[in-house]
Amino acid sequence: MENRDELQIKEFFSKNKVEISDDGFSNRVLRQLPEKQYKTNWIVPLFALAGMIIAGFLIDVQKVILTIYYIVIEVPLYFLFAGIMVLPVVVIIGYFFWEKNQLPKYRFF
Amino acid sequence: MSKAEDLLWISQVVIADDRRAFDRLVCKYQSSVRRFLLNLTAGDSMLSDDLAQETFIKAYLNIRSFQGISAFSTWLFRIAYNVFYDSKRAQKHYEEINSSEIDKKSSVKIDFSTEKSDIYTALKTLKREEKAVILLCYMEDKTHKEIARITNLPLGTVKTHILKGKEKLNQFLSAQGYGK
Image (cartoon, rainbow over all chains, first blue to last red; front, side, top):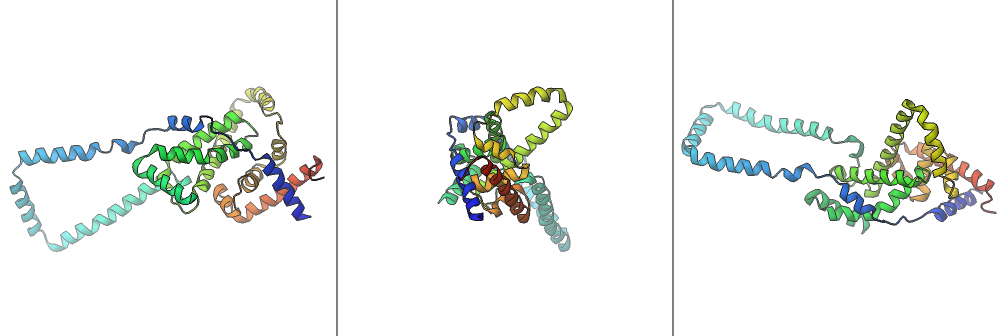
């Protein structure tokens, strides 16, 4: 009895299952797709590189490197370690919050 | 092959923003998504196409959050299901504000969804969740586990909805003289 009912429903749905032809639907979807933000992200590294090159011409690079070297030498070692250890923690926390904001409805599978 | 093919296209969209790859995904799944929404909207083809369009745009915007644990179609159906209920909620809110408009609107709707097919009449006998679950199970051939993921309902609840929906459908089909 139960099998007969199951078959009846399956037959009913397969009879009513229609394949919908595209008829320009996919083209309409493609036309509606918004431009993604990250397409313009190349601007940031490009300007950073240009800035570095200009700075290289304007500043005495050797002096800057030496100054940084002396600062590093003079700073106690545990300060340096603490500074380095803090970085991954900050990055992980930042990443956690960034992930949290990524549309939770669709992200779990 | 199908899942591997999907993953290849998805990775092309994610890495290179390849719209042609996304177009292939749309072409592959447009029929099933539109059919699902068409049945949910009781044959309102204009509304279902708008919702399907919104579904694919949301999928495109959120494709980076697809983790590949389940099939791409399951993920897509989940978006379609959410889009449909979001639109229902918005419509309900609108109707609450402007109740005089509804009478006109609903009369138009009845004309629009005149029972071209028995399926819309049959689906009208079901409750909201039962309808979605039955459609996913029998029309879109999804497993109970996949349906639970799409609808975000516990597996037991999905099974109960299917059982109740089946009972109602069988009553309807028997009354209509099916299976004789």
